[in-house]
Length: 324
Image (cartoon, rainbow, N blue to C red; front, top):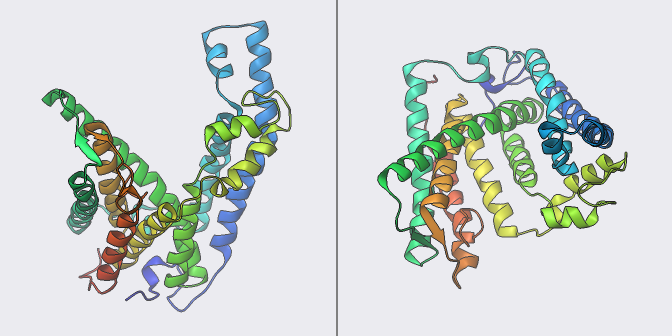
């Protein structure tokens, strides 16, 4: 079962310790990045428009073609990228072992085991979807094209998994773990994980922003920040939210059980690899059972939630071996 242990505590605290500093540091970086982007989106976009009007070239035309919400997203990453090393140093995570990425044979075993586990979960869901005609193999793909699709999907899956797990599990979850304990940390991190995967649809953003998607208003960044915050209220789907929540809970349980970040990275990568591969190798034809089985995505039906929930329950009672 899940219990508080020293390996996942921040600041070198013992298992019985408690600190809210990591949580405050994360909130400072996260809120500060949003405010930074909201302040600078309008001015930066206007600078690009000015340069394009007076010294137009390929680069300025390319930059001016982006919508303002893209500027907001890119600008928000600047303080995050600059702040994460500072936060990791303050939390005493400035080494591979402290982060949870030791380089040794047991860690390789954890990575391979969890990657295969993630693949098996995804394949079990997609196999049922294929059985009911939601996915059909695309004809005409050559072996070389299929290999290219798999290589691109694998590299993209590992990159996405590494970045998301570094933020969600290593920083956010461990901050909550140190402040409240494993159960609260797993639940709160998973809720935030599901929440952040809901975005305002692009067509809605274009219609809601004053001046449209290419608004020159200096305060447009604040509108983008607002709609980014309430994005979950647009096209909310309980099945999708619950699927993402249970996915987050499974990743949290893997991390707590193995004590290394390789576990959730590999599980995450295995699932994303399957999703990206299926999206390119199979055509999607949602049927009448798509509410339960999904409509072409892994987490948009109740089936995914049931499978992930069952895997989570099994994992809770799994007895881990020696720590790596």
